[in-house]
Image (tube, rainbow, N blue to C red; front, side, top):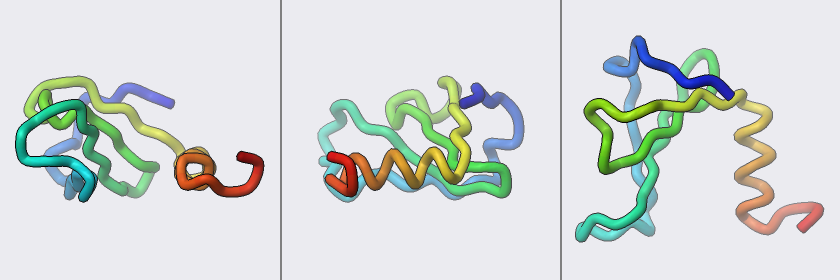
Length: 70
């Protein structure tokens, strides 16, 4: 996992459909050529962005969804 600071303006960010419009603790994700990018939706304009490998992201989402091994 890497913290990324450049090239974020070309990514298309998505917020969870479970997120309400009243704020709260939410993350946004964007798929890029070199991995999946994750950021805090409240700090979208200037907060840190993490880059996660595609394989690691797939394992994380499978685990979060209650997939094998849970």
